[in-house]
Image (cartoon, rainbow, N blue to C red):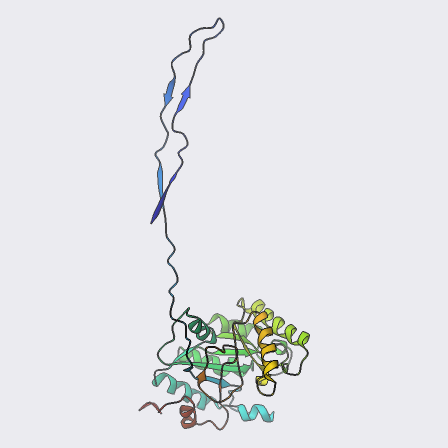
Length: 297
């Protein structure tokens, strides 16, 4: 604890009276005592933020990828194949809680990799792609009911642009409630085949839009359709990762492969597990790795 003294208004005032005309003798000096005593003000020493050992070795952490969670599958074939029934989704969340998993966000994972935080004993990340309206009507209430968090990848150009997508008001409400909002570019662009100027613009503009509507700049990007990591060259991988970094992101998520393995040296290529209509609870448990927790299935 440091202290400092505030200067007093005056230590003393000497008043000299001199003789008038004719050159009289100088009068004696008058000393006026100080009007206040020195004041001691305490200033707190900032407490340094805790630091942890960065994660340097590959580790296991399931990052689950969802799309629609709807009672009736969408007409679109791709969306229908990715749809999870609300009852199945609830069973999956209940299993995670029963088995002792803690839902964290991509930002928390990236902080742990960098040594700014520590992972819980059994972390899991739940991600939801594309910003569909059922993320607000089905997913958000189910997560809140269980005290869990999720991360939502938003295609910013599709918000309030017509179609089956969430509004910015809904996205802001979710963000304020502790859900993480990620970028999925402006129009779900193919980052493998697009020209660099377009890719850079979409990475930047989607991040700006999310920050403008939620007050929080997204930390993570989700590559649309996993590109360029599904069909691009290693050279293109490096080019896109450089663009993503330059746009201000700290990490990025793939569209697979179905593995829980994560490499801390590759925070811009985090693996995810795809969940869809054929993912029953037994399959879901197997995705997570290890054996099922007794009494939780």
